[in-house]
Length: 225
Image 1: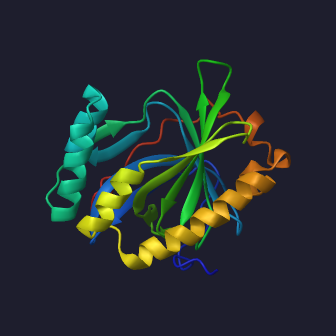
Image 2: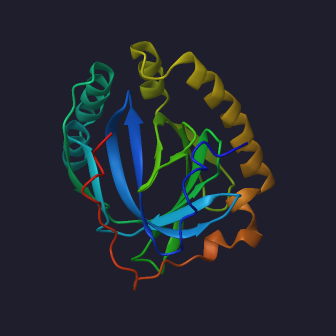
């Protein structure tokens, strides 16, 4: 499928880009990444602990206190259009993110840098197809995810209740829901068959981030529509 942001140039390896969730023309979150590679197959980016981001204040509170009420409030804020952003830095893990153009999902690999960069889990994020921008790419998280064991021997769906609530609130449209359902089937086939980043030949289980890369920071325009 064609990349809806193909009018923007290809990103260079090592370049800082910003992944933003945009809902009704407002920035819901932003995270700075470093480009690993940019090919017709996928845009691959990564970040390490300390990378700069922006997130809704209710979501940040939930992460800090471990209570689910903050996540629920964040969803209500999203539906109402009433939210505030605050600074957030990436915590604990190294993330390698595979974004195929035109797809309603991305594949995330989380590594533990304190344990010889061990692959901790695969995490498939269902989202609107990415749209390239001058500073990176925009998408929108559809709030349901698939968590896959490092060896692909098992998987579990995550946040189904939150996804159902988002549909009731109108955050996830019927168009998005239909596309996400098709993407679920596509992703499961990829996991079972070991395709894309899941194939052993891709080398993701052996990947190491480059600690010499500077910590990616957000540009001043990150929160602008």
